[in-house]
Length: 184
Image (cartoon, rainbow, N blue to C red):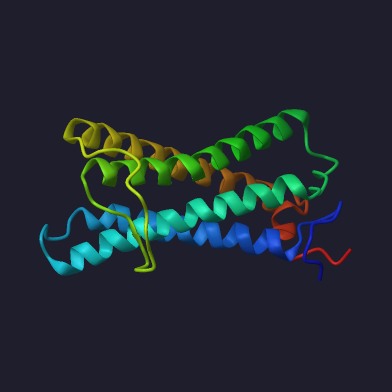
């Protein structure tokens, strides 16, 4: 089993980063969806909001690590039967996913800064406030964060649908290569 990618498959590092990011997106999305129904001044609500923010910072850090790893390593060739339009769609989808992996957490960070609430990453590091508190900005940033998160989830669904199409209809190795590290 290789740590790095090969011309035929993804390496263990890429696969672990991919699935860790996917799991964190799911967890952060679930928290984001459910935390707004929690009682406003309950200590558990504060803990839940802070966990959501900590997951967002972790996603941001993983996205940066993934981007560096991806551009510094070769990528496996797409399946030979993959049509040019599918390759373009996959490229646009992947680029959009990466952009949103950065945008969604940054918008969340800016939202909390505009609300004058610090981001305390798992109780280890308090992030600096990138902007001053400003209620009109907070509302706009909150809406932008939500919209970007919904777009991210829609693209994740498209990404999953594409992987399942390759596995179940085309019968190529696209999904398997993201689960089983290359041995070559």
